[in-house]
Image (cartoon, rainbow, N blue to C red; front, side, top):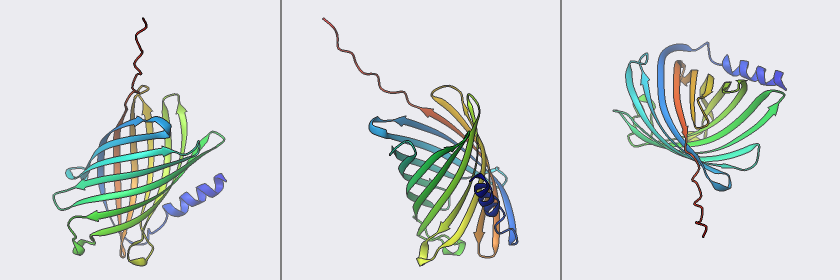
Length: 228
C-alpha cells in the first residue's frame, strides 16, 4: 500500500516539467479561530494575507468560514464560504468537502475530495479569469507525529477544472509542513509548497511559504445551580 502511495506522489510531482516555465516566491500568513460544537459539529473562521513578487508585494486578503461535521471516526464533511479581495478583482468561493482518514502502522493517511465553485465579481477574459469557475480538488496527505507536540506532513493535490463540460488539469500542489502545539488551545502551522499551474503551454511554478496561527475557543462552562 505504501509503495502505491509513493508512486502516486512521484508521478504527480513530475507532471508537466517539459513545458515553458516561470516562477515566483509567495508568502501567505493567516490566523484561524476554531470551536468544537455539540453533536460532532465545529466551525472555523480564518483571515489570510497573500504576498507575491518574491513575497514583497501584497496581493490578496482572504476571509473564510467553514462548518464541519464528524460523520464517524474516519469520515468528516465540511462546507465553506470564502471571500477574496485584491486591487483588481473580488470573488466568492463556495465549497463542499469529504475527508477520510485512516492509520497504517505509525503513519496517518488522509484523502480529501473538494468541489468548489468560484464566482468573480469582475470577469477579465484577457488574463483567463472568467465570471464562474468550477474546480475539483483531490488531496492525499501523509502525516506522522515526530514529538509529543509536533506533527510533520506532506501532501500532493491535483486540481481539475470542470468548466465548459470539460475536465482539465489546472494545478498540482505539493506541500511539506509542520504543525506545532504551543498548548491545548494554541497551534502554529508552517508550510512550504510548490504549486504548478498550467496555462496553455506555459507552466507557472509558485513557491509558497505559509504561516498560520490557530486558536481553539474553550468550551462554554455549564452554570451550576445554587444549592440551598
